[in-house]
Structure formats: structure tokens, C-alpha cells
Length: 251
Image (cartoon, rainbow, N blue to C red; front, side):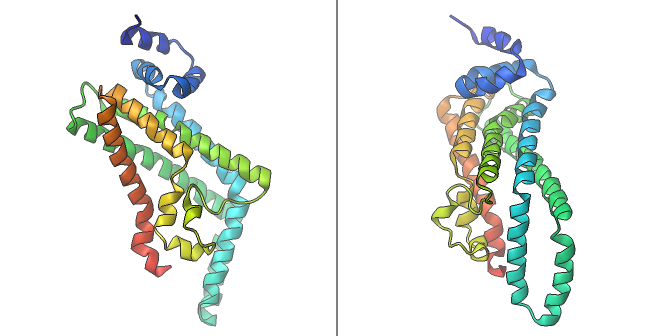
């Protein structure tokens, strides 16, 4: 019978690329091996993959993102008085250019990835502590959190592949098409659109890995891990819908 210690010892000898496949078919054993290594680069590796996937998607989708941004800007300009529209158009000609949009998207996007990872790890760590988590550190929870985001990286690459193959941008992500109207301004004011845009198979896979990862790092049963994961999911969806709830009336 193989013990947890033996499994972790075996996993520490596996190369990083094999751990990527282990997340798919043996997530619990893979998490044990990841935690046994206790190296700072164990969270950096999956985060770099996520960041690279985001950069690829941004580069592939930027022409379509820029086109949609200009379309929406023109619709807003049409609602302004002529004097204000001219001033706004001058600003738009500077801000809605490829270099500016690309730099802005990459800068804020990568920052959002890091903040999102930190927020996830912080919530899971303190909620696990409250729930009675045993023998864990913030660093171990942070590392597990980084690895649970690998399905999101795969989702970004799938989006990039779809855009490159169809030569069309993606206007509605996830399940948001169920409530979309086709009018981006109206949909931006509907909190259900950003909420449902987060829900897809890759996000559900991400949640599944959180359940498994929490069970390993905090030594929880799957039931307790599932409850904490569902709370995390509800908060994540709430934050996604928050901008539309706060500023929807201004759009």
C-alpha cells in the first residue's frame, strides 16, 4: 500500500511538465508532490503559463477588441453635442490606437491575474483556518491556488485558437449569450452578462481543482472543501457582476 509520504516523494522527482499532466488525471497526488517541493518557483511556473496564455489571447484578439472599442466609442459620440463630440474624438484618436490599447490591456490584465491569484489564495487560506485547517501555511495555499488556475490558462488558449481560426472576435464569453441582446452597451449594464461570462467548462474544472487542492493542503474532507469552494465561487461571481451593479445606470 502506497503512503502519502511515498507518493509525495515520488512526485518530487517528476519533471514539471509531468506535473501538468498529473493535474488532469491525478490531481490529489500531484498537489501532494507540489507541496512536498516547497520552492518559490512552484507557484511561479503555473502563473507564468497563465500569463503567457493571456498574452497570446491579447495579441490574437487585439484587432477585434480595438474594432469593438471604436464601434462603442462612435455610438457614445453620437449621443454627445457636437462640441463635446469633437473634444472626445481627439482623445479617442490617441487612446484607441493599437500600441496604447495593447500596452493597456497587457499591463492591467497581468496585474489583474496577479491580484486575482492573491485574492483567491487569501480567501482560501483564512476560510480554511476558520474551518479548522491543519498544518498549512499561506505559501502552500498560494501555490495550490496557482496550480488550480491552469484550466483557466487552457481556456484562454482555446479562445485564442478560436479567434485565429474563425478570424472573428468573441463578443460573449461563457454562458453570457443566454442573456445577451447583441447591444454591447445594454449588455454592459446587465450584471448577469459579466456573471455568466465567467461560467464555462474551464472555470468549473478550476473549481474542481480547488476542492481537491483544499482537501490536500488543509487536510479536509471533500465535503468541507466543497462548501468553501462554493463560497469562493459565489464571491467570484459577485465581484464579476459588481461593476455592472454599481455603474450600470451610467452606461
